[in-house]
Length: 389
Image (cartoon, rainbow, N blue to C red):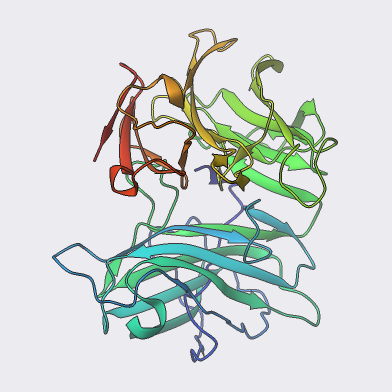
């Protein structure tokens, strides 16, 4: 969703299983999408382990286009607190991405870049018997268990039959055809570049938010507990971020974590509390603004389920023109969503803005909700309707 700190040119992780043969390539100049090109760091041999989650063992029907999408990175295969930057010394990082409409034998190519230069590449046919038509790859990793992975900017690019895939942030229009992360040689937790490339926001020690101007001069904007999500608004002046309180977390469950949504104006350094939640935001990106920045979509809730109850829902915010307040639009206020007694409708995963006012999300229901009535719904925040797609 956010562009990372300018200095972060991120490389990428191959989509492969343990059996994949990884070829180390002599660095060559980066294609035009790369931000910079520097001399490659000394890099250990990348070891890849993968056993993808499969949702089907039957070849897909029809003419749907095969695709990879929604690539992200984490320090463990099941970690949902996805990050764009890691501290030096980390020994293993996992690449996670989704796929659909795949068929046996489709040629898949993976290209990994480190500090702007081609590092590894591999091409081979899709193993349908192993991965299936649709699912999520979540156990591909690179690691150096001895000294840790080297600092640098990492980038991943994926191809199906020679077509580069839209694996980047779904909030971008068009979707980027690469995914990035970095390993930083200092205390930086994460870095995010403003849309106009004149500012960079960073999180230090978990809960300190600073912004740097084009000359690198820092200004501290906020000191909180933990900032798991941060995003620039399109005006390159306002930053939305979440401050998380884990003090009430219930043992052995994701419940009890509470998030506050804040906004800061980097010009006058004023911060305002926009929304205080009784639970946490979730997903890889957290609250995501529309392309024009007037609306924000998020998943609220821990996702914990018990019987017919699931603690998760969509929530939308309409920002005031002065950016000092907002209007809350909750999932249950939208007409067109199926309902039934003692049942809960909840988002299966993060959705994506289709334009400035329409947000597409996958829904599911508990207990008395008929499964064939659920699926993808288009939420229109301008008239509070939801229409099944």
